[in-house]
Amino acid sequence: MSTPEIPTPAKCTADFCLIPMGTSSPSVSAQIADVQRLIEKSGLKYTMHSAGTTLEGPWDRVYQVIGQAHTMLHQQGIVRIQTDIRTGSRTDKAQTAEDKVNKVRQLLGNE
Image: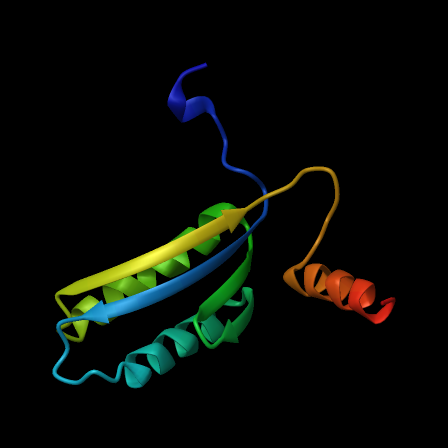
């Protein structure tokens, strides 16, 4: 099978931390707020946390939104952006990020 014939997974969970570099201030909260507004408009399920955001949805759409966040910030004059992404997919069952957290909370509650 050639590379173009291999499909991407139908769904994924991607935890990403986008870091604008070389800004005039050490604070990047305004840029992160802009990214959150973009994510809200995307229609994807998401959870913002202190070190990034977890996106859930179709693989191609999740990665498209992360790419759009880069483009949006580049258009604001930020010339360098570093993003760490941790992505997971599974085919045995449907599971959300919230499901994963709730399972651990359930186990902790049994102690």
